[in-house]
Length: 440
Image 1 (cartoon, one colour):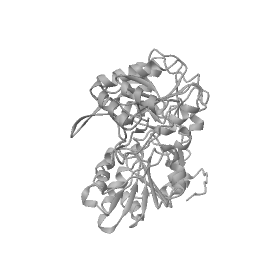
Image 2: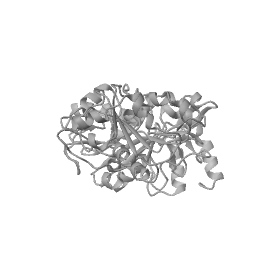
Image 3: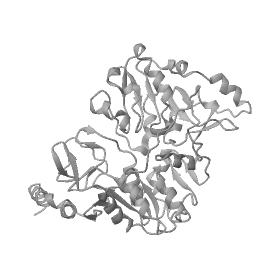
Image 4: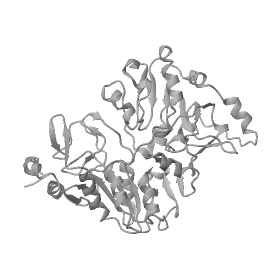
């Protein structure tokens, strides 16, 4: 529900009128309500813990989030049917509930969240934000994402104020006058050590780093390979960043002189992102830092915005690629592991960018309960989600090399992908490609 914005010098009086205990604030949630959270570093632990305490009073409350990384109380099996996790990107905090059928999943491109939210009823929104500044504005911190859309679309908005949430700058603020209730609880935000790179990660990163030119604008996704690429770019010059995610590697590249953001077509001199994930050092560096602008995901992930950058490069991980070029980055067959995220947004944005390149990285094999399997497959597993369609895919990288699939026939794609598959599986893949009439 869009609230009339009222700038006032006495915002503190309004703040105090809206101040509640967490126990009182979550009483607005009713059975069958849909509660929307920002996900990741914007999820409010104190509010969610208090909500779980009301389990004996509630039924079928849907909890929507994006990459929830903390296993909150409401996700435990004993709350089955009382709280229903429905993440739009499955994170570690909700993965067990989704895989066991106690929760569900909604497939949505990250850049489309705000548009889709206009089509669903949102009863309550809960967001963890930074303390208010001298004018009554609070920052969405490390999880700008679709937080503004929650404020606009939810019937009731509850903010949890935490001093642990950095005051990030950009188009990422909410005013005291725009919300219904405020709770003060100094919860930490999720922080993670830098991803450790395997030898395979390092090999794939070296292949990609050689393809990135000076003056490129980069987007790095989650995982060991994207982070390792960041470490290998220290010798590059005049790089820029337009990325949905801020990571520690960007600070390292800035300090090494590789990132200047001066060659960017849009927002020169600025890091552009919509959320951050990394160490506490990263979050502290982002606090009140004018070098970094956080924008809503509908802007950062808009392919037409991405495509205006010169030499935009995206690097993201996938789980398996079939011989026609379809990539699944979100599920293992029907078992939902993660989600769409912004992978396709950036693949399509790079396609529009002058000199743009996109890379999907995947180790040639994966360990399963049935043994080692190839990540290059004749066809995707039954029920697997197609995250990047074959009509959009560009480069695919394994530790055995890189192929450019753009503009190539299915026959040529099959031949090229088999060439970068693990040697132990190449003969079998060729046989299957011939059976499927992909190759003579």
